[in-house]
Image (tube, rainbow, N blue to C red; front, top):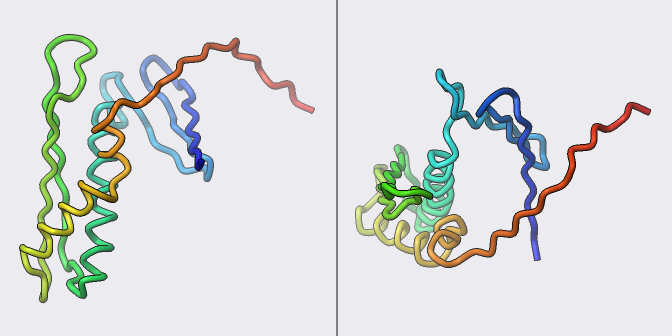
Length: 141
C-alpha cells in the first residue's frame, strides 16, 4: 500500500506551512489578511488538480491535445458544523485545433468515474484516525 505524508508547521495563529516528502511547500492560512488558501479551498484545488491531470493525459492519448484548458471547482458547504461540502461542481473548459467537446466530456467522465483519486476519496467513507503526541524539540547534535 502506497502512503503519502505531509507535515504542517504552525507559523502563527491559523497560518501553517505544509511540506510534503519531496520538500514542496504550500501556505495554508485562516488569518486575515490571508497569505494562502484555506483548507477547504485546498480540497477544491486538489479535486480540480487531480481531474485536470487525468483529462490532459486522456486528451493527449486521444490525439486531441488541449491548447487551452482550465478547471473550476465550486463547493457548496453545509450551514452547520462541520460545514462539510454537500456538493462540488467541477467544470472543465478546453479547446484546441482537434479537440471535440465529446472527447473532452468523455475524458472528464473517465476521470471522475475511474481515475481521480481525490474525488474517489470524497465519494466513499474514509477512515480518519486521530493521534495526539507531545511536541518534543529535537536537540542539535
